[in-house]
Structure formats: structure tokens, C-alpha cells
Amino acid sequence: MTKISILLRIQLFLVFSPFILPGQELRITRSGEEQIFKAGSIYELTYRPGGVSDDSCCGTHFIVGHLRNELPDSLFFVTNEYREAFRKRDRKIERVYYSEFPSYLIGIAKDDIIHFKNYKSLKSRKTKEALIIPGFILTFSTLGTLASGFIVRNDANRNKLFRAAGIQLAAGFTLILARSKKQYKFKKTDDPWSFRN
Figure (cartoon, rainbow, N blue to C red):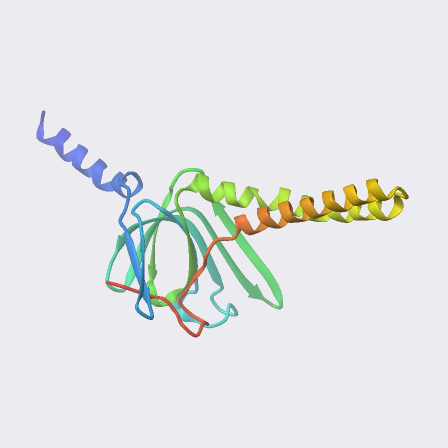
């Protein structure tokens, strides 16, 4: 191999390695409790640049991606999704940038992070997101089943409908709650998490 082809391969590796390599683990602590997140896991993170407390000037930013690198004062994420929401003249404006493949390397100051959720993979996140629709459908269809139970005159059928409504309601709530994920808060809480270097 020639020197040029070796240098070209090294340059290509350096350019594309943030998007190919799995990243690193992250450790956070609070009140003697420590949480460790595996390398390559997906983060859904909310932050405000400059540590501003409201979204009047700079807006609130949301990213979905995996941790690529951690420095003492900042985190670098390779993102699949980036959103920003801000207010302008009493109107809320939101911009969304989405990519099926990891596309941007974003550095975020640790002091700017408000909270995040952690998922094993993008597939895991999408599965949890998809559970909310059937959960709400089952929960709201309970009303129809209950109404039918009041209309039916036969006591045996009425009891069956009430039991079916109870099962629907329980299944709907289970799907909605299965969608929810623990949120690790760094601001606006009595006992905030902090990053362990």
C-alpha cells in the first residue's frame, strides 16, 4: 500500500468513527445511589443552552442518540433525532430534524442538561412509543363497553360486559404505563442527579 492510501484510510476512519463505534458508558449519582448506563444505549435528552431557566430566549432542545464521548464538563452524542422548541411573540415554534441513521455529533454542556431517559436501543424506544396508541384505544373503548353494560337488561350479560370493561381498562393502563420510562432529572427537583467523572 502507498502512503496516500494509508493516510486516506486513517482520515476516513477518523471522520466516520464517531458514527460507527459503540460509544461509552455513563455514570450518574444521587444521594449515595449510582446508576451506570451501558455503552451504545440510546438517550432521549432535554437541555437548554447556557443553563437558561426558561425557553423565552434560547428554547428547549431535545435529542435522541447514543453517547459517543464524555469530557469533564460536556457530553458528545451521535444523534438520530434533534428537536428545538422556543417561544416567539407568544407562539410556540418547534423544529424537528430526524434521520434513520446516526447523523450529527452534538456536544452538550453537562450543566445545560435538564433530564434524560435511557433505552437499550432505538428499537426498544420505538416499541415503547408504539404502546401508547393501543393503550389509549383500550382505555377509551372501556367507556363503550360500560355503556353497553348499562343498556343490557340480562344480569348475566351485564356482569360479563362489566368484567370485559375491567379487563380492557387494566390492559389499557398496563400498555400506557409500560410506555413510560424512568426520567433522570438534573434540575428542578429536590434530589437531582449529577454526573460522575
